Amino acid sequence: MKLNERSLVFYATCNSPADNAGFLYKRGERHTAYHRRWFVLKGNMLFYFEERESREPVGVIVLEGCTVELCDSAEEFAFAIRFGGAKSRTYVLAAESQAAMESWVKSLSRASFDYMRLVVRELEKQLEEMRWGPDGGCRGCRQLPGSWKPKPLGPERSPERLPALPAILPKENGCAVWNNTPGVDRPPNTSSCSGDDGEVNSRPPPLPPRRRASSSEAGSAGAAAAESLSTFCRLHEQYGREVARLRQDWLERRRGPRP
Image (cartoon, rainbow, N blue to C red):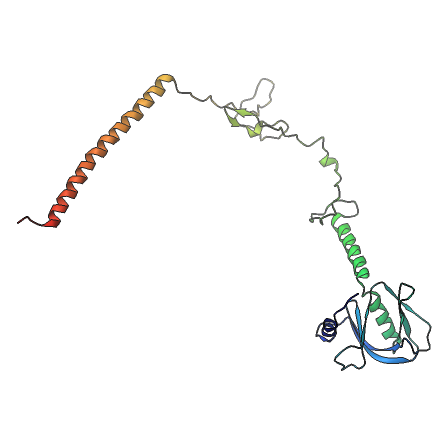
């Protein structure tokens, strides 16, 4: 893994909240002596400083692919951070009290992204169970994307009882009749009369047929249109001559009397 030193130093010393911080005893890699260091846990990175007031960290441990467990050591309240692999280093740390050791072990065990991924999956599973319920029925909540489940049909939702709508609605006189769909309940028609058998006819009366214009009426309509056009032309010429005369009078008055 390639890390930028300046970015790590800034992240370690910035004012962002730390997941855990405190003094721990760290065993050296070459020498087995323990050194007291100030540790700061941010996300999946464990920084350690020589002193609490130090401006730069001495080192950093990336908590990915590791396990945190208790270990036997000369120091009391010791635990180890072990990484997988033959040449991987094991970090042995020791706390100052039992409570501090338990707090650090818990924080370090939950710092990796693998753990967070498991937590997110578990929360999604619990949320899905809360929304769908134990019987798989939706409780009025919008489902998560990718977590769709077929909703079982109850006796009131059986497909045999659902009305089947036709692909093309029936038409009467060119207009769609919406209440003629078979299987759809209609309000009772109180204005209709009862038959011999006492049943009320719920079908509305048919619409009257459209009246089509005859050839003679079409000819008279065309003649009326032609007559109105000729009338408009005559009026246009009459008012046009009047406007031209008035304009000529206005121009003559503007020029003034002739000498």
